Length: 101
Image (tube, rainbow, N blue to C red; front, side, top):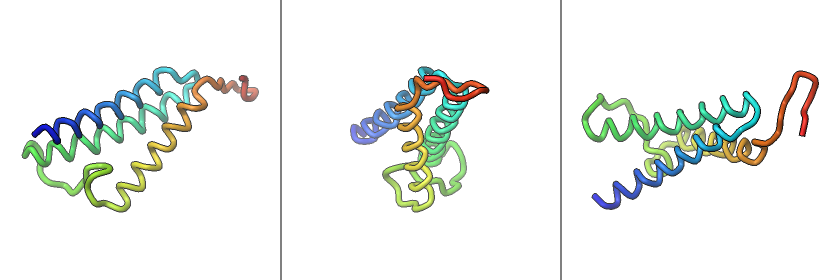
């Protein structure tokens, strides 16, 4: 029980970090991409936990970073890498004429 709550806490930290990156991003594309990636992470975790709890039917979505799932793991890690890149470049402004620093 303690381990499951600890794991859910770690997922909550990842999701909160993604939300904070999205809110602190200065350009619209980075904000929308960060929110989309964070929502994808949230849905992976929520659907898996809801399946295990019996709230929804089993559909076969693995729990990220824990369950075995090659493609799901790859998309989760690529998404998290994009989120880290957005975090690094969140102060960058993009205008119609070019990139303003």
